[in-house]
Structures are given as structure tokens and as C-alpha cells.
Amino acid sequence: MSCNSSVTRVNVSSVGQAQRVPVHLLPCEIEHNGPAQVSQYLTATTKDCKQEKMVSFRGRGLKGQELSCPQGYTGFVLKETNKAGSDQEDRTVKVSSVFDKLTYWNLETPPNSDDTVVMAMDWPELAEAIHGPVED
Amino acid sequence: MATKKKRMPNMQNDSWVVIAADSAIDTQKHDSEPAFVRLRNPVTDAASLYMLSDGDVQLFEVKAFEEDFHSWFVGQTVQRDGRLLFVTPMDPLYLMLPYLVKVGKEGKFQPLDQVVMDEDFPACPRLLSCTRALSSLHHIAEEKEVGGVKFHRYSQEKTMNWLKKKVERTVTVLKARNISVGEGVKSTTYIRVKSESDYHPEDFLRYAHGILSEYLSEDLSKALLKHLQLPELTSPKEPEPPSKKRKLSELPVEAEEDYTKFNSADFARKPPKKMTAAQKSLAKVDKTGMKSMSSFFSPKVKAEKK
Image 1 (cartoon, chains in turn red, green):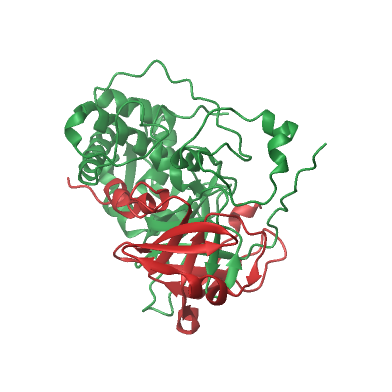
Image 2 (cartoon, each protein chain N blue to C red; image 1 turned 120 degrees about the horizontal axis):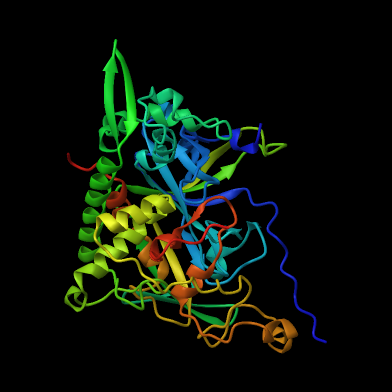
């Protein structure tokens, strides 16, 4: 049997223990997974002016903006609890964090409505047009 | 010769940032257990990731929205994988169509459970437990009942009418959201426009057709084009997808420390074309079996099958 038979279950009851945390999308790849002093070095020095946020991150000027999840949608961070030994085994992920807004950061460029992540928030509405039931 | 800093592959990724419909991950119903499953993608004919909610009542599409060089801060942690996954309700008929079409060539009425099955994809028959699968089947198939057993046969005519309604719904949203659909921007950039009057109505139709074609076999996509009375475009041989590696950017600097790569031989081979941020995001090739979020930004003549 191929790996197509394995399913990944979402343990929804773990939502009870999930924390609501601030979520930032950064315009750089950080080759690390693990703890970081985000509030000390990013949040603490962030300046708010009008709709826009500014911060200096590693000497680079980042400009950002907060985005809400589309209506009827919730943000989750899913985490695999026990890593499966092979790709044929079923897997389980739990909800480790929940969010209803995120902050995305551009490098130098001010945030605007053509930013791809802003556009991405339109996807659920377009998906509803494509997938919603049609009348007879 | 300058050595290029190697980017280590992200091997131990065990965490994903997801925006999901409340109907998919219902935080009020703690005993529900939605699951990601692999099903045959009607376009690529290969595995893609979908989600079935508890009891298979509803099917969801999983799309990865991804840009080069992004990572997340989640609380006080770094998550290297900068993708954003969307889980949105999906019409199960799109995934059932290929099976019905295939069996329909024999012209016989068949019981559904003998049609919607796939030895490569054990989860396939679960599509039939989706509430919407059976209640909307009449949009794509004729039905006959003999002795309490229902039999179905694919109908191209019904399917085309159904898809046309889908196109019309999509056009409405495109117009309402001011999504730019004009010639020239349609395949690579995705920007908002001030007014829709700059566009020919055909632009919207063609764009919507392109979006729906993300769910249709090549044959059905062509048939739909005809049904919409849109002439086939002769031109687009798809442009070579730009290199997956670092791309030239209009930004003054990129957030990586190693400038020596600008001198390296590798850099010199890069396409000299400047790309917008949107183009960069579109250029990314998805490697995970999930469809790229950006695929809906790029309606065009179907990608050629490999």
C-alpha cells in the first residue's frame, strides 16, 4: 500500500490547552525551529504609526501591518505530537496555538493592498464562489 | 572562487501555520476529529492533500500560500517554514468527476460505489459520505433507480451547465473584489484595479475559466471553454518557470547576509528579468503535494502534462 493511505488527524480537543499568541510573518528565512526572544527584540521596539508598524530587525527596516483572519476562519498552528516512523503510518497533529490576526512584515516597502498575503485573505471568498452549491 | 552559503534543508519541520474554515476545525466540538487525507488531484492526476471533517460530512481543500524567504514567529518561537496554509470548503464533485467521466465512456448506468473508487487512494470512497456529494450529483450525472438501487451515468451536458454557473459565480466575486483580470496581467501579476470598465467582459470569463480549470481535467477545461463560447488562445506556450533559487529582486537588499553570491557563477546564470513580488510568489513550485496558493492567481491555458 502506498503512503496515500496514511491520514493525519487533527486533535481538536487540544484547542483547550492552545494559547493565543502573536504571530508574525517575516520577509526572511530563518534557518531555525525553536525558541526565540521575540517580545524582547521585535515586539518591544516596534513603532506604530497610523496603520503601519515599523521595526528595525537585524539592522533592516521592516514595515508591517496587522491582518485579521477572514470572517468564519480561525488561525491555527498545528504541531505534530508523535512523529510517525514511516510515511505509511497515520499521524496526529495537535493545535498548539490559535490566532485571529497576524502581523506581516515587508522589507523596506510599506504594506499595501497588493501584497500577496493581503490578497491571500481574499481566497476564502473566491473559493466560496468556486465551491459553493449552485442552484438548479 | 567565492563559496556560497549553503541553505540547510528544513528536515525536522513538525509545525504548520493554518487558516481554516470554522466548519473544518470546529473548536466548539472537541470530540470531532478532522483529518488530512490524500486524494487524486483531477488536474495533476497525482496525490494532493485535502481535509475531511469528522464523519466525512464535508470536504476541504488545502492550499499552501508561499513566498520565497519567509519564516514565522509564533509566540516566542521561530518557525522556519514560512508557508500559510488555507483550509477552505471544497465541492466534492470536482474530485468525483474524473471517475464518473472515465466510467461514463462505457455509456452505462452504474452504482456509484463501483465508480468512485481508486486502489491508489483508499480514502476515495469517503467522498461519497460527503453530504453535498449525493445531493448535488444531479448536476453532473443522470440518475436511474431500479429496485431501490440508484444508478448514475455521467452527463457532459449537465456538467457544462453546472460549470457555467460556477464560472458566473466566480465572475461576480472577481468583479466585486476588483481583481485585475486584463490581458497581460492575467497570468503573472495579481493586482487590484480601480474600475472594471477597463475590461472586456470576456476577460472576466476567461479568468474565471482559468480558475475553474485548476479543478478540471484538460478535456473538461477545453470543453468548458467551448461551452462558454470563448475562442481558444493560440499563443501561450507557457513561459519557462523561473528558477526556484534566488531571484533578482527590485528590493534594494534581501535579508540574507551573504553578498558574495552576487559574484558567483551561479548568480550569472539567473534570468535577468526583474520580477514583482507577486511574480516571485507565483514562480515558487510547490513540492509537497499541496497545491500552491498562488495557483489561483494564474488562470491560463492549462499547464502541459508532463
